[in-house]
Image (tube, rainbow, N blue to C red):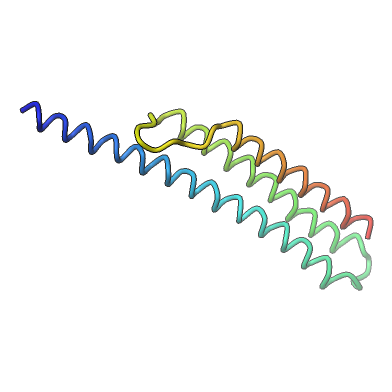
Length: 120
């Protein structure tokens, strides 16, 4: 009976490790989605640059920039909440500070990109 319990605990530990790794892949996917929004903003600004009045394509591009920032922080919140519920076993999760740092850097870079799009 003891061996059966140990095997069940091992399977649970492995499942938690897989969930930790899946959480990191999901976070990375959301970061890519946010960056795609930034790329879309740049593309819209480039394609619709001759459009008059100029504030309209800039406003649309800004909406995608703000959406990207929202995605970065929503992904951070979800990733951190998931990590708080799990225990690390064999897998080592990325520290929350790295997840936060990446969200901050991408948010600032995206907002700076939006500012540059308004200056162009």
